Length: 129
Figure 1 (cartoon, rainbow, N blue to C red):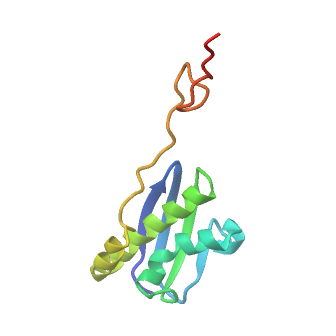
Figure 2 (figure 1 turned 180 degrees about the vertical axis):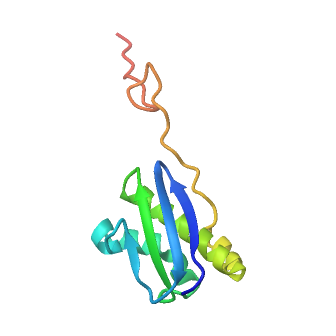
């Protein structure tokens, strides 16, 4: 058919493995349609934003296996993996995707719990008497 591209991406503790090939716009996430899997339109839009950024919504068939984390982290992982795959497919997409910040992995992770505190930064209430 066309060239097959494999990439992976991560966000928080979510990991996505993506397969992209030229096709008719079929998208599968863990064997389901994106809206069926995420159950929220905003997450589907976020995950597949790189396609609309390069105006290629109906030009690729995409299959993604994603695990770990929550739905938001998984959407971010798919977005990053898809961006990398599009650049692999056509180097010309790099400028557009980079300008929109889609080729940078989001480094934010959950802060560790520290001893002596109630939450990550919240201390117990101070009592003078």
